[in-house]
Length: 178
Figure (cartoon, rainbow, N blue to C red):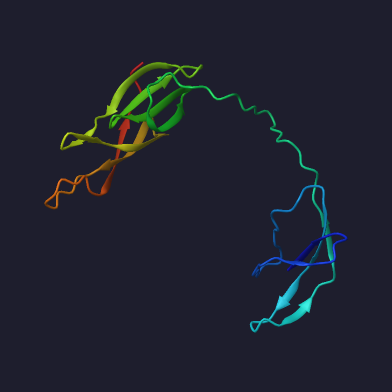
């Protein structure tokens, strides 16, 4: 395939091996007219057929417009610094998990995203006084919050090496702790 802006002399090749009837071309400039030529190329690289010049134009760039959806400014959660956050809505309530100090914590958030309560959900996996756990994720399934997390496992092998990661664990909680 060859491409050029309308009025330019030189064609630019678009490296594409396409076995379909349609092809998307990306990285085109907005509000620009283009011309294309499509070639049928044999396995030896020779051009077997070439299309006439095809014309197309791109639209003027517009700002993102959302239909009934607004992006609000970021809001910092009133929870201590943590990693691996995850959030899920259940029956109109928001539940939030995070990993802090190797422990996975569960919080219920109010409508302003402030914690109503927070409790340890999965205790840290301790090896040689080092706490491990990571990557909590939650979802709602069959009346329970289902959580999954990675557990780092210590491999001894004759040296004090936290070693390789990880086993995956999964559990359930019925959220009746209001």
